Length: 174
Image (cartoon, rainbow, N blue to C red):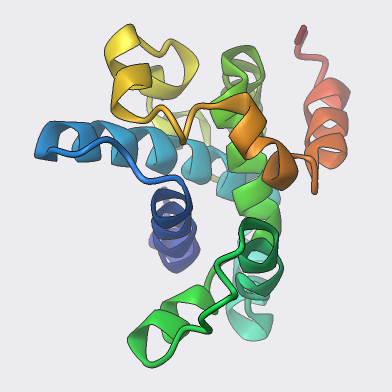
């Protein structure tokens, strides 16, 4: 993934992991981070498909996590300092699309294929195997992050737009 999207990818991944923490342990944390990172990378590539989109992102900013924090209840204690700064790089649509991908492996596979049509290219997201073909170990490492009911309120924010985008690309999804 081009470095121009890395601040949004890092912030969205961090937000997902803080909102839906993995099981205790270094391996579980690493597996959860890999899954969230793959979902966010695909979502960011689809959200900002051209170089111009990425440049506009840096000019205008992604919007921040305020609405997401409100939905999950994280806004009870407003963040301060460094915590507040990284949250400004969270893109609500990217997080919502990533939540959709984490909850639906078939949609994730179709979305990963769609990335090939962006300026990022097919190789930019790798195989995204932990996202598209999750193992039982992946689910155990991140039960909150992969739970469709828990992700539902976040995923529903922009699920329709993602489905239209993927469906328009003539990729069959269930």
